[in-house]
Length: 353
Image (cartoon, rainbow, N blue to C red):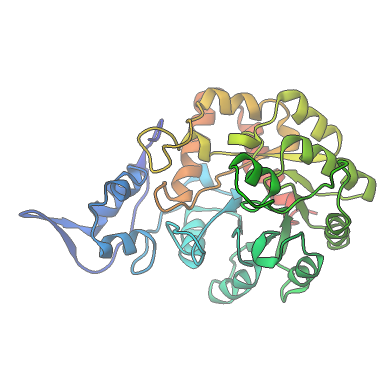
């Protein structure tokens, strides 16, 4: 699954016991290293015992990568962890420990259904020095339309750690239309293409709090309409969500239009890992060359996140490391990589004033 993977440069610390493979005894250290490198292939086969799956998900033991210069200062501001309403490969606390050990500067968690900024507050109490933040998605769990009251409460939560409000994601009207569901999904525009009043209210909340307003799973055309209104309101931190992914993929001209409207463009590495032979085989894998063609459009107004955390996919730390290595391999300059995975995401979540 990985294009240029060097797991031997990491050291993993595993506790308690061994696994048995037929007549052979396998240490947990070797078992988990092999499973992570394989990018979740053993999960797909259904042959791993439940106990082993729990370990890989961070429920019993810890997989701790030792710091690497490649990952020093990285900010991944879009990844999914437990607890969640979907299976994930690791929980937020275990991931934050792994990220800190690997040298990350900051993380912003995303849950499609639940708040995670409140849990970030608790994680910071348990892990002094942890720069972890949360975000909030306007999905159906908060009502059948975008909910400004929920957004306001997210921003007002103790610690001020909600640094992004996403427009509807899995419950977006655009996604429902694509999936041909019998229900309408949550809209962001009215029938005339105007931004809905409740969406404008959320934009105003984001502007007041000086946090990210992200387009979520809106269509490319909807995203452009949202950005026009956001510019009118005066939002400073607007993000087009995963502009290289699946049905949300934008053309270069659309991307440039969004940048002209003041947006930062998010490119997710997940599409370079899914596809045939993986646990997300329903999608077509994106080549690293195609991925690089996106990030080359305007690195100064772009950033990379992994969008990882799926139970059948690689650990997000490993995914980020693979991403950086592959960008280097196809000739992306170190200064541009720094913008994409360090400086721009750090500014977006408010670390660099």
